[in-house]
Length: 342
Length: 267
Image (cartoon, rainbow over all chains, first blue to last red; front, side, top):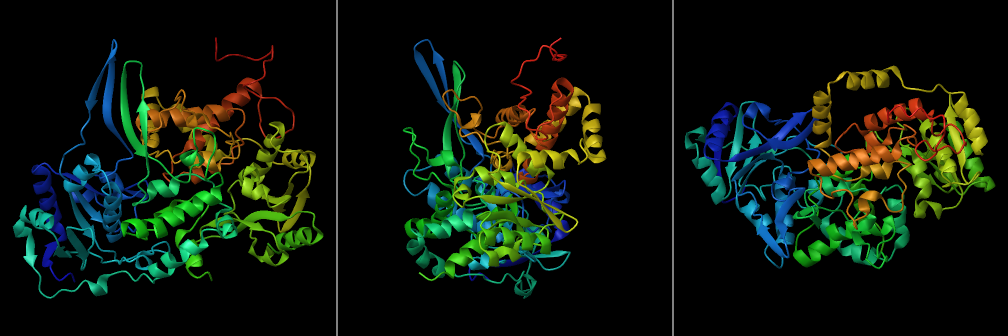
């Protein structure tokens, strides 16, 4: 248990009341929803819509703070003058309900990237208005590897409130932050005092596959081992599926969608897996081959980001490996690198 | 499986090929993955069963794979059709790849385009009853219902281009969606951008798509892009008699004018 946290019990049947209080006070509720056999975060209004038993959504929750595309400004030509209008981000308070601890932890990585030099009002506004209600994992699958990258199925990092299902009827609630206290304060009568309940024996068992230090210390020495990267990535097709389902991938492109007189500048997701990603105007491409792009993906997450930002660029959610059309398995390949003699 | 492993071993030992590209075990029991077998002792990696559906022809144009030397390629019918279409489109020369077909525990070598044509001629063509039923269902929808169906499908597209990457016939060195002066297709995955991308891709594959289904299988969002291709394949067949990937005849449905074209879509 987190030392500073307050413990409560929330009955599953009370979620409906909590949801109506939150929506009535102007909150947007995002939660995992099952549709056609897939689970994705979507806007909900009642707990009946929420898939509380999910293992992992296809795409991550990052769109709540970093949407797949967002307009930044609009520019209109009037004769020889240009009229530029900033398009501010949506400032609606949002509750991200039922994200697993891996997704909650990813917010720290995104924040480290988006705030490391100049302020990013779009990201920061969204993060400020976001309250994270985490949901501990009671089960995982072969693709989960949070415990290899510093996470855990009941990890509280990134959550304002963490729920752990004790049985079908009750959640153990850890209120972790000021935002969490505010959220619980919206319906204080729903949160009963806890009575020594423990979450530990409810949590999924995820066996660690490698250690963070084991990877980060080896990677700089493996940079020039071209044959290693070529071998791992022979079957990689160079699409962006891994990056776009990833909760921590934060690369974006700025694009002008131009009409003759009325245009929009927007930011949209990009991926280092694409060959276009580093193509220079001269025609030169410093990462011309897929093996170089695969190396970049691994190095960025497990070497550059820890070194420069102090955070790992991976939370072990396993989405990339589930989504990959050719079964590129990140945990397997990083484990192989971690065990390589250098 | 044993026959395939033996064949691969023999081919590598004899130096007939330098790499056997096939399927091996994947991350979980439902998955397989492409393997690139270069040494006789690696041949035990090779498996073949109903899970082996990815069109491996896609890999033949990848520089790192080309660098491995002459390949043998484990083929399903869609792979063979892609190889023939590569031949038609001058992407592959005859005998550049040795196709291997596994049937009933036996391995057949198809070393030339002519042998692939002959093999494919013996297979049934056309849609399966399930595929036909899906198209009939789409056909039966009103324009408004069809628009609603495709809007719901395509709004999930995140523009990861897994469809393009998995498709053997999407091999353009510079894809139209990567051209930005002018920007033909909106880059973002907004409704317009998603519609344009998926429709443009389908149009560029009309009369070329070999219906391997790899695009839809690759899509992380489970979007049925194969249905778009299948509808256009039906049009290309009805209008121009196009059956891409069955023969080396160099007839391009959308790039060859014939006086007896029906041209019914114009009238």
